[in-house]
View 1 (cartoon, rainbow, N blue to C red):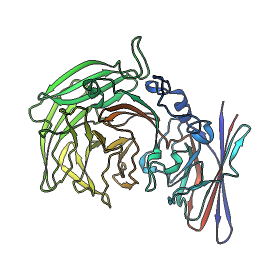
View 2: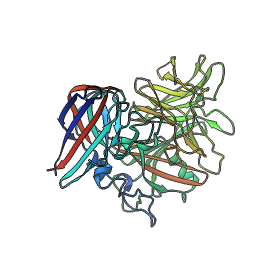
View 3: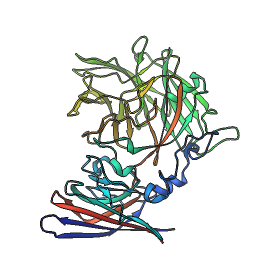
View 4: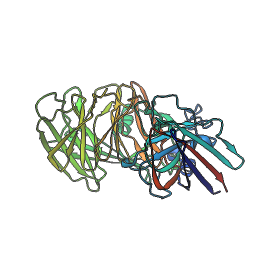
Length: 463
């Protein structure tokens, strides 16, 4: 079956009544086929008698107006590739709309015309409307998205939870604490090879575990509830300088550098003076390592993370992120974030938020907390995002994830992570909802201003 989409955009000057009409046809991406045809870790199977999976009807199906039920408008042209599912952060949408009427104060969001929008015999007709105060800016491209993705895009001051749709939570509470910790200390996930890499610091060494877990292939004696994972290898890399600082609570974190190395960091938060941080760099293919200590002049940092091996429950707190050769650590006063060059510790920049962060985790507060995670090229924090150019986006700061201990690991439209709190432990799978289901580049960019209304009629049909 082939899908065809046609968009008609009408910009009406509220003073003169003049109407500018743009008509374009689109290409369809792999997004919907990916979701329907990909099943990482058996997310769409029922592994227990009482399923905790998403209810498909009205969340994802019918495809229109659910899995395709929103619209995103971009300031730059989009690369026309079927696997272009998420644009880079230098081209975030300036406007969007979902499959309902916008009742929020978000002026980037328009409304669906519920009277004119309807199912057709061979498809669906969407009609979105933007008032003079809504959706203003340069528009060079348009894409259909999910209804959830059209609510706030990747996040706004009126909402940021809609970017994450929980597809499944898998209860792993019956595992021993020791086996839970192997998953909770995950740093990297290789989906294609059914592998997880788990790192911690123990007995004066970095312990690296290579874990086989069913993702896309399953053995004769394996299950999709994580209970049958196998530690294929365990390596201890002795350290002389690096360690987790602290006594009862141990401060430290390991991160995937996405450059062939894993990195470990440890510091105690400091509200004054200069920060001291010990670090280790481990090559993935042979486990060779470098280590050292930095004194970061006048840098006032929160701890990069925290572990508590003496607790009755598996614990991990993440408060840092690594992206493109830099470590990002929040400022102690919650008013910004430090960017530290991993290759040159003298290169330290304080990026000002422009506000004081509420500094809440992406999940509920508990024995495990994740405050920052990397999704694509965006560092997603509680009430902020750090884009690839280090500009800051202020968001609402809502609780949007289940209890979390690990970064979110991404495979196409899916995000996977482990976490728990005080005896309730899970593996969680999310759908990253602001995906591109279609791509529609305008022949010439238009500018929507406060003296214009905008109406978009988008017809998607099966041929």
